[in-house]
Image (cartoon, rainbow, N blue to C red; front, side, top):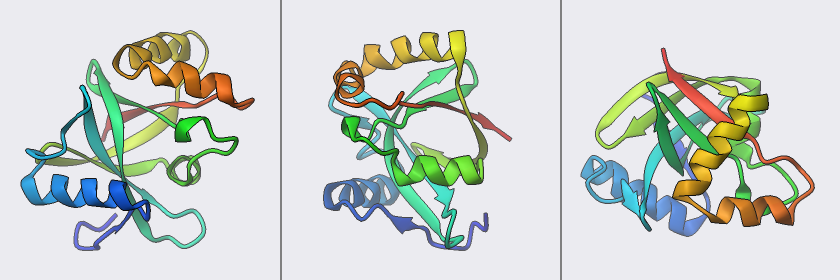
Length: 144
């Protein structure tokens, strides 16, 4: 991904506002949100090749970053998740640090462990899972 291209921010109004505040403040405003921590994830559109950016709750696990593709328990996966399954090379911003990453799906025992870790910081994930028949993906991003 070119660092000179400007990604399209989430079309969801409050998320787009959150992203703008985060970027403009270098993460000073927006990194901490409702008792959790937030990163900005930029993916490549699987159909258009356009860069898309969203704000997500995350938790560090060693040197990796863990995110959850919950979409509030909706029956379909969020677009950002579909994008990174097509192209796992992403850009992540944590506070004022931006870096390249590679995403992968957590499975089996690792998924179970990381799901519990994420529910500790956002208990609603269990409620979201109860609302949908799909298994909500847990994604691990490693710096590259």
